[in-house]
Image (tube, rainbow, N blue to C red):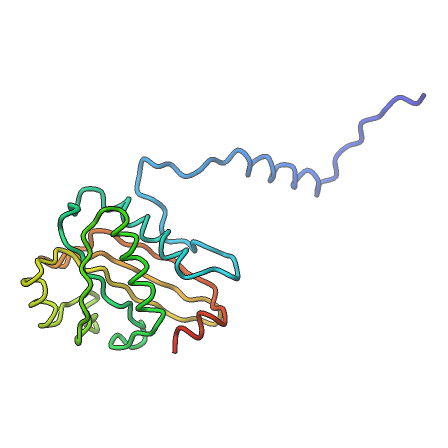
Length: 191
């Protein structure tokens, strides 16, 4: 019987082994700081908007902590097209409703009101501004925060930014960024 001889590893195998070991040793990000939110939450080509909306809302709820008490009311607004801030779509309305559902499930008070005037982003100001009607609703229903967002459509992805904004002073209490592959179903929801 021939003795077994150890063969030296080829450079390509060695690099693959180092990458495998290093990847296996890397742990999850630390939960001590704020959660990592500015990354695509899904890379699957068949992602459902509800899945990523729930993940984004969970990140916002975790980030929110005690900045907003559960009895304080949140008003969801349709997410708007970043290219035309006065325009939404079925996707924009769906994302707002799905995220609002998650806030409700987490114990927050969410009010559903159909607005004739949406919450708009003032061009050049970079901050959300409430319309006169929304200000009146804030007084009537004692709305403490608005769940708002915008989306940008690229060649093969949709990039979404969502924010929970305190109505008293416009301070962003929590936010989340995510993206989704632009599938035929999502393309249909943008019309």
